Length: 433
View 1: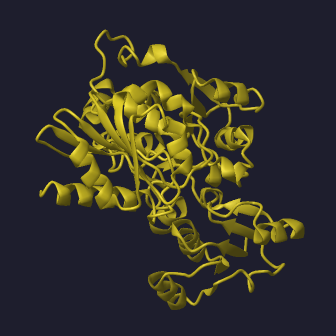
View 2 (view 1 turned 90 degrees about the vertical axis):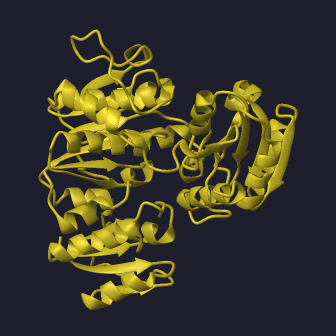
């Protein structure tokens, strides 16, 4: 591989560029939008070829491969152009994996990826291992390898990142669950989305491990269509609902994470740690000391009988189900954003907990229609501060005000983190903290 095209100047694209530079690979970076000033300065400083505002100069037949950012679908004209030329189009994680001799632990699924990735990394850190964390979780895989060469890397990987892999081979792969998400990317075909997730195990061998949610019927059914060679370990309800027990022990692990879904998340990590031979004492110390990332059932403030929870990362219906299930007492639910083909009916059994729904989005029509007659009070706004103020007015002692959107954030915010940060700031302002 002597010359590559890199499409996109986000974390994945710039990471790939830095790794290409380290490996002595000539590259051209192309972005349909604008490249940030800092990244443009870096590209100029290393003498790299680049373009912004459209893919024009990059349309050349002399590339050995094209490395694309995960946000670019295969249907994009620029990708179709390279397909027609017969030039391989690969994802950034595939590109990075070709320059890595260490061991990969990769985590995918519709919900819980970041939590499991963070907890797995924490366990290995506590165990004293040489490990880095990245992928969809912070720094890109290529970005990690551009700066260091750890013995182990823990990666959160999305279906978009797995769409264009051809040799990516984790030592331990995990598929946590499947729920309808990003269906707009897959022609509203759930099977295509599930198959993309299953790519995580396609290049594993009999010396590798694949941990899957054995109770997830769409996932286990889909796995029958794939020839996977790894040692498969199913994680079932019986393994975590009554507590997660070390092998040969009658005393369950104590966990820092709360909620039934996080018991399942913890079980995946604990089983992986056991495969790696980490001691029970070290695992226990790690899972009890772990603090999750922001925007995942994060308590923002509690006082005067009110509790505010920031669950902005809940961008699909299943994630909201887990959040509402974990709530005690009455809930004022803040939801909305860019709908991703959601079916809200799975939430109906939990609406008895919800005293009011505040829709926070540009177009709330589907959300309102779905819950009319099921939630007594429904109101709409496009301002976070208004949403929090309304919630405070409605709340009585014992109520929880839950931001758990079920939707993407791009109608009003930069991303889910921006949404969560603005919610946190609004809570502190309204409560005078």
